[in-house]
Image 1 (tube, one colour):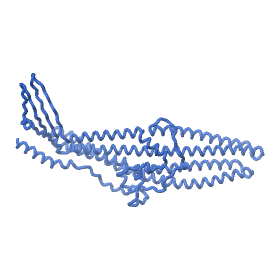
Image 2 (cartoon, rainbow, N blue to C red):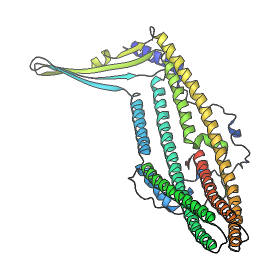
Image 3 (spheres, helix red, strand yellow):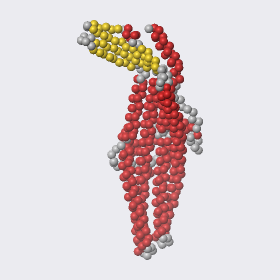
Image 4 (cartoon, rainbow, N blue to C red):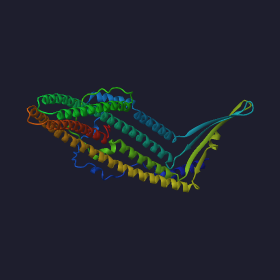
Length: 450
């Protein structure tokens, strides 16, 4: 039997040397365009990215943080994402166990007083790395599922924050409209008094009442939007419909400086980019598995048995040697199918490479757009504040002039409408500023901790 062992060892050695090329792990390809992802931005080498800050430190509103924590606990999408991680981990465990020998136990009974039993073991040597590449592919799948979970969490945190601030914006618009409604009530009373004094006519009073009704309709519309938004918010965080406790838009403190960090950080921080690269890694290992199918597989198996007869137990240790089998299987008739699988794996790998590259380009676009949105909205808010101060003075002056008969009601109506529009525009721009901050936070990976 010694010469059999020598043959097996020789075959194993030769095939191991031949099969080393299939053990190569995934290595990221060169991406020369990465450093050019950000436009018109000077990034210091030691700059700290906004994405380095976790969500519970990035958002300062205490009520918002409570709602985010509730959403992370009860949202159904994040629950499904966590289960996907567990599913991928179970597949990885199965792939790891496939590398170890398997065993079996058989027992048979015959005539009274006789039976036979045997313990066997088998092992696929994985010379060309099919099982090993399967394990690495499963590892990449686990990391991909974790990246997916992080992507869901990042999107959920950003969506909860944006929905919360949208509610604050609607509250502010409602407060502005209600103040404007009170102003129109006062204007109507003033115009009635001026009409009785002969300084204006019924048309002015009717026009003021029409404007008041228009604002009243806007108030009702805003109340409906707030009610619907609260219901959507509850569905998002996974709770039954209920009032959403919140602060005010004026209480919000936004960061005065935001940094995108270095572009290469998107490769490791951005979850969808990591997902795309891990898909590429899985295709790399699938390609290795398809290539290994062209080469023979070697499996070893053996058994040791016991027999009984007439009350005697016989153990035959020699059967372990005699039943040692080395099976070397070389694919012959399936070569066409193997070629097809190899072409498929190669095409899938190239597709994944294109998608990975495009995903990174899209991430750079989102970072650029978010930064531009935040910077533009900040400048617009400053202009809005100046415009509101000017229009408030214009309203006060036109009202004063109307009371003294030096102007007509049309100028008062115009000034009031312009002020209302300016105040609503400031609220919109303030929300855009907040959305820009949230979008940048999301575009950079949402506080992913390396």
